[in-house]
Length: 172
Image 1: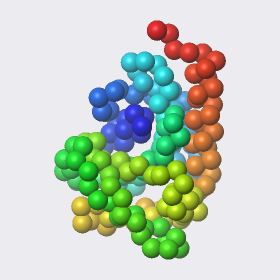
Image 2: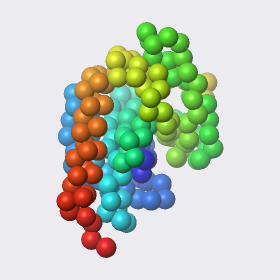
Image 3: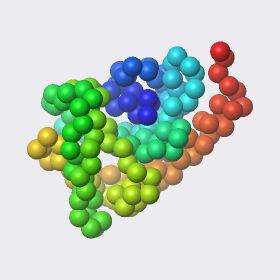
């Protein structure tokens, strides 16, 4: 999650544990994807992808080394309190309603939402063409491009990053 935090915070710098990266970056459609490593330990943290929108909003999807998924949303106009959980409503059209989850602001402009691995929302996200989000009473629509391909690429990114870490462990 450090990389996701680094990505999200960098879009709007990292939380306590600084993440270097991306070490490897590439594109999947309109998504910019990167593999992130902890700059103190050298160990891989996660792979994350983001799409910035012209209105200043950004959506990011990340998969960490423990196979945990997160979404993050950034709005440069927000003034969120760091680390105080807030409700986030997610609605993916054609997925059968909306779900309220809790996100954690990691800085005043970014909230990170963990996604349970086998959740209906995560599975719907793979096929989604848009996601409607409500944060702090504000409604946002994010149009997604190739989410299934993106999620597959993030899985491959984590696998290859973990394999590289085993083959070439960081220096002590």
